[in-house]
Amino acid sequence: MSPHADSDTGAETGAGTDADAVVAELSSLVFEVTGRLRAQFNATAAELGLPPAQALVLTNLSGPAPMRQLADWLSCEPSNVTGIVDGLERRGMVTRRPAPGDRRVKHVVLTEAGERKRQELRSSAHALARTFFDLPGSDQRHLRDLLARVLAGPSASADAESG
Image (cartoon, rainbow, N blue to C red; front, side):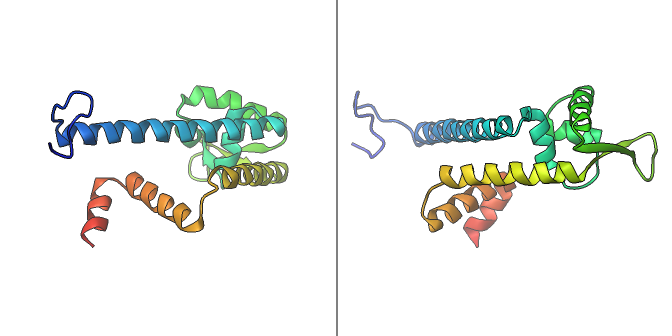
């Protein structure tokens, strides 16, 4: 019997079937990990008095950014970003400024209060992530490297294997 034999029926399974099962399991595990990370992030945001969408904007906003870019980060329509930014503006965490080259485009900019809240949010989220990824350092680095290869795409993975 081959190493790919089905133990229940004795029927041979193809290598493609095994690979498909591994890909399905990887996909499921990655979704579960991201779901848990998102839940932790949302809980941290709630503890800091922020709705998740506002927390995401604060976390990702490191410099002036157009509303369109915020919509891309949040995977939503630009019209939805207006309400999110309005809420952050009411809290004194961001301001809107005209873009230097095109006054019709508004850039969202962190205020000092927004930067403080951003650092608080990032620090709390990082502490939870450190607990979540409680693996030996070499395993953390290996997982990081594998995920980076996956995100870089197939050509990066092929280059890494041949090098």
